Image 1 (tube, rainbow, N blue to C red):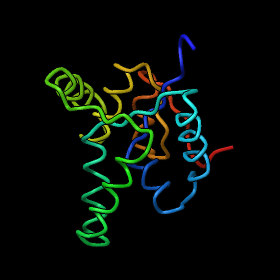
Image 2: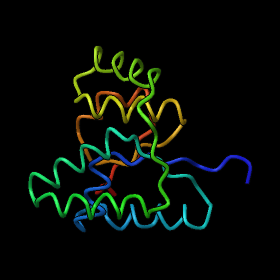
Image 3: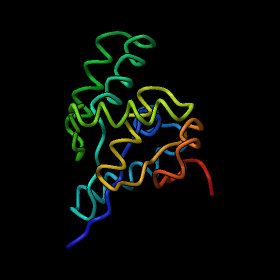
Image 4: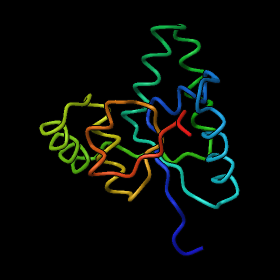
Length: 138
């Protein structure tokens, strides 16, 4: 398959999947497509870190370790926060009202030409820069 679609999970999407929240089914479908090599699924390491600190804060360190092991077992490519990605995220953050971690998701989506899978309303501010699939919307 020449040009497989690329989906980028942000922390909202991964937490929805992990906690069986609204949007979980769609994230499962996307991961199944990746398992079948019908698409790529990527996530910035900074956004995984966000999931891990939220998990540790709310459910403890042991659960955060379990979440890390699960994330690493998924058909999910973790993208490093390279110098170039940091600079791209910084530029996005300087011009849009969103969190620093969300700026990494947006910058990685631009680099990977990926559709961001999210339900985070902060990402509305960068809709002109990236493609977004909104979880929980019909």
